Length: 182
Ligand SMILES: CC(C)(COP(=O)(O)OP(=O)(O)OC[C@H]1O[C@@H](n2cnc3c(N)ncnc32)[C@H](O)[C@@H]1OP(=O)(O)O)[C@@H](O)C(=O)NCCC(=O)NCCS
Image 1: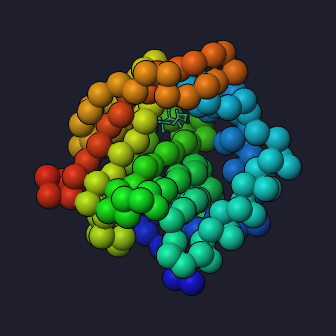
Image 2 (image 1 turned 45 degrees about the horizontal axis):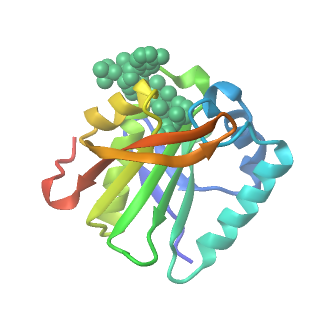
């Protein structure tokens, strides 16, 4: 298994391990983080299960799922989580998802994270298309993806069922041949 290591200036990405469960729970278990997501805050046990599944998926060949810890500049603290899912039927294309601990918000780190995910997907994985779907109300995610170069592609009506009912998604995408690393 080839482990993921991807370094940016302020951030890094690496595969999650069992040692990350508590740090990831402080993100996935926080209701401010999940407010635009189609699920309620995760329990510690649910996060431990997610990490177990992520580690299994990391060993699969071919690999379709990358659940990555987002680490800070000194590569010691986990400050977020990112997910890149290569579509089995369309292996040139992958969906991304991402979240940061709320004490990191508002300093441009989310935008840097989207840039790093694009760089990882296009340069290390050789993908052609990378897309992400967000809640129509998620302004920080909209701005982070736009600034990182992911154009708005359209609306998927009733894309996900949330604890509050059906929710549309706005899709953003970037294509390798029009992407400029920033
Ligand atoms: C989405 C997320 C990663 C953005 O992280 P961040 O570090 O705050 O993002 P940035 O600081 O790079 O800000 C991105 C843009 O949003 C703006 N912004 C940030 N927080 C904002 C807020 N609360 N209200 C309005 N605008 C906001 C910033 O000013 C910036 O705009 P600019 O590019 O015009 O300057 C973060 O909010 C998060 O983890 N949210 C919870 C999980 C989530 O919703 N993930 C996205 C799923 S699609």
